[in-house]
Picture 1 (spheres, rainbow, N blue to C red):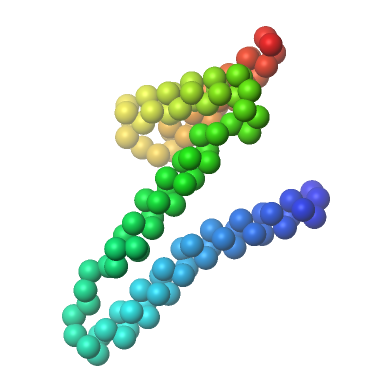
Picture 2: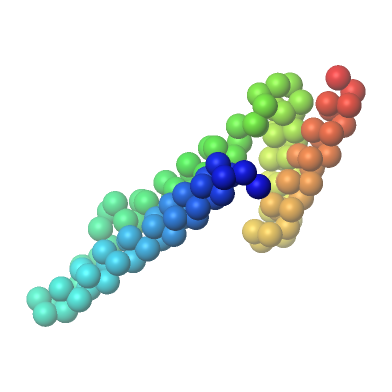
Length: 115
């Protein structure tokens, strides 16, 4: 693998680690500090909203195909449909992802071979 890819992987890993670690450290500090002052209030609004916002950002990035051509968009739409259908049936996280990724790959291969 190239050096640029390794650097990209390290930056992504550090970013993923930090978006989990920093709120944890902040809350631990807040809990330690407030134990002397009395009961702890509810989580701050920004911390409650942070998790769903990060998930929405990842979803938004995942829905845009790498090559924005007709085959990429078709595969994205069909893959998303399969993902939602499997999720409705199983209500799990793993199988919908597997089904959506496999469907996306198959549709891209078939669509690009026909075009």
